Image (cartoon, rainbow, N blue to C red; front, top):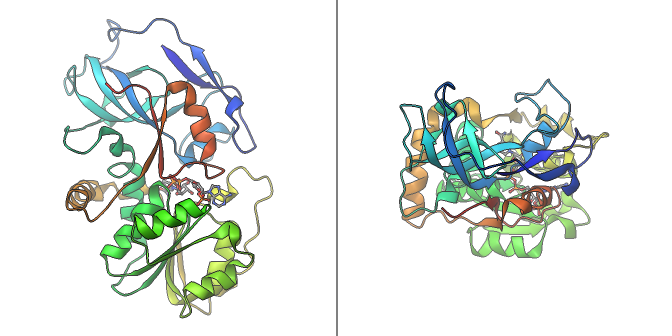
Length: 339
Ligand code: NDP
């Protein structure tokens, strides 16, 4: 049962060799006798998410505890139940939830798993479009951004797992939507696949404030913040009065010992901007509605979805590290096994 373990706590941007692939011994076939009700899962797809970087540091003060050095990395995944002593699950069920970066995982808190009804929608999409990142986009856009038809919306890291869905929801809502991304290939995707009104490569813009002014001559009503740093600073100067900023993430600031200062925060006052951080799990009451809306939008062709699939558990560390340099094109997942 091969597994990926954390070598030691880090306080730098994650590198591939911070994680090690180890032989975890024989593949378990059954839930051990006498243990509390549990589920043995064969992992099919694993999700690489930026928040996992925070679990690699020795910091107890977060909303989620750190990993343990030498122990398997935990993350969201989709798997197949191969044995169960829990009345809610049977062999053959497909489930999503917290699992390990290993071929087989013994889940001792099966209550946190969701059963997936197999359908025409690929199973790995339950880690993105129909999973946590898609839900982050949905809850963040509808609950935090208070959007109105016709408003002007800017999304950063716009081609990623969360950003691509935010932009498309905003278009469906009747907004004008511009996205930024770090390569020209991603910019093409934003314009030609996800239907953004405009998009730009922030790495090719010497002056972000001027770039935003070009796309938003009348200013921005809603900023869906994914990256932080200089982009956030430039957006603050371009916000309209009574604008909203949903602070979803600040991926450029993860792991920096000396985070980039945001100088234009004073703009919040004269422009009466509401800037609000949020964590998707505080909004889980919306999850059933999200699932049904999103599956319908997808089937109706109103929302499209791009994922970046890395094949093989051994490639999980590289796939994860790639999130922090923008290697992923769309939602990053790892296929451990197709079935
Ligand atoms: P993505 O799929 O968007 O992958 C991360 C992307 O961030 C990269 O592809 C890259 O895109 C961009 N990026 C990486 N480093 C930098 C940098 N230094 N400066 C600017 N951009 C950078 O990830 P997700 O969609 O999963 O997550 C997006 C954000 O949402 C993250 O900040 C994450 O932490 C946050 N999040 C928050 C949740 C919540 O509940 N609040 C839940 C889920 C995610 P590019 O090539 O465009 O630079």
